[in-house]
Image 1 (cartoon, rainbow, N blue to C red):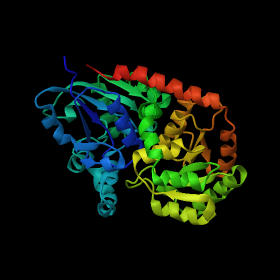
Image 2 (tube, rainbow, N blue to C red):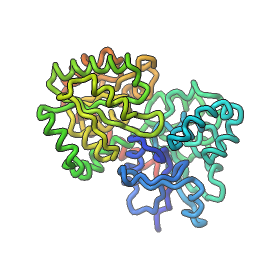
Image 3 (cartoon, rainbow, N blue to C red):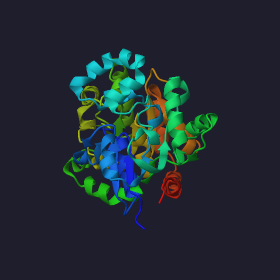
Length: 400
């Protein structure tokens, strides 16, 4: 009997490194199955190594009257509201108008959401079966979903998330904090690592091929003693924060002889900004820093895989470093609490005791020194254990 056609749904309708990566992981875990990538908007990210994604309205045509499975691919889907989604999906010229429309969104949330993102839900990346009119959903699942600050979000958004989860056949989450929050609302969930845990196992050949690209060869030639990859979101872009980053990264280069390679883990609004990286590079010694401008998913994976250590604000940057058994550190913005972040929740759930988690900017250089001294066998054991765990648990997410 043929496997049920499957819709892989998620936030890979915008350029975000992690979302593009988990889409490809879930697809690879579903061999010999007719599948469709769907998001809130149609996008073709093949040029960046991602999938070709259709809007939700196209699922009816894909189903052709057949029952389909719908898998939420993963990521911090449960707490992204419709206004945030609309801004992140908008072309740059429309972003100011959408930001200005926040008041209208707050007054008419579900109506506004239906008009702007095609789903009458305050949490449009958490689909319920009723959100797909005209489609017979055989099995609805949430795969390694995140929602660490769900209790701090609007109560109506929480109600929409709860309705979607209650309609699901299986729910798995990627951290114990989200699992506890859902349990308080009567939702049982399984605990599963993030899909990007499988990066090295599933895509090692592809990543090695991209490592031979000219841009990656130039990085290795520039830094024969190795390099640290560094990344941070656009909100790190004020002068004081960049000055602090530059001071810490200079200490890293002096203490360990490493080059610094700055890369973007997302180009959608509110993600990483190339201009901010260039401003940081000007604060560092030119011979010790490079700005890596490729947005290709596999180029970025190859860059991380070839590094000595990952430092950044991207959780998926950390998880790819974990998959390659590399030292890793997440940095928190000076104005944000690190203890309650999705990064901290993931570290508490899956990292070995004593490994560097989320550090304040002023402690970055010291944290790098400690992380570089981590026992390599511990890092390898974590990588292999999480890959085994994901493969085993994913079977519970997939229906026939």
